[in-house]
Length: 340
Image (cartoon, rainbow, N blue to C red; front, side, top):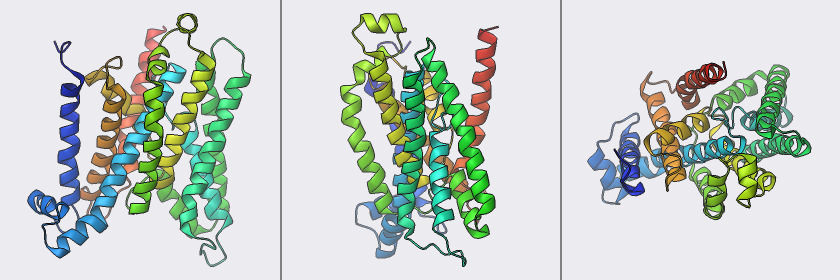
């Protein structure tokens, strides 16, 4: 029915949803701000107090949720193409857990007996990026060394095994580390954008900006990855090189996002499926639709986390897991039935 609809028209609904939710999320806080005051403050026409609230306190959080959601969603879409498995996502392949190891190890190593950090907290994102990169590199190395026939499945299995190893390491570090730092680590492990600053927004934004040209250059390769290995080879695609390249891009996106918002899970799993249903994975603009869907999911989760149990703020990652975990179980059951 929508076969002749242009990609831009297909993208308009989710773009409108993200825009409306952005205005609503910026207005929600300890003191509610109606949309007209939000728009006035954004345009520099509001009161001084409104402008401080919007630009200093609320907009960094909203912007970081949008950018991190887009990064996690794109990472999930790339991983699903690389491994040809709809259940692939950064949290499934151990990349998110690798970032968690980096953060918890950072808090454990650089805390003194008084539970104070001996270095600046601004080094924590670097620890997360390092952890994600190490575990992602291990997945790439193991997959590259494996010359078997079912490499996509092997990537999933290697990722699951490394994720289990990372979870065990995190548990041990939390138990052995200071109690105060353990509670701080648990907050990061759940995922939250509550501590957003403009420097976080800049870092994730620059990471996305660096990846966009790569995705544009690789757009044909991304489409070819849905082919079987024989067809891909006939089309001139170097399958191993393409898989490693896009896997590295997915690891980079995940590392940049989780370094600043924590281990928000299942966004990379859910967003590609939603975009596939409403936009179509073989249509122009699919990855843009995935990014917008991820932005909407994280921003919606963070907004709900602020209003469900005030004055408490729930971690956004807890709400994304409530949506993502049932979908993951559904995919598992569906996959088992299709192979029965």
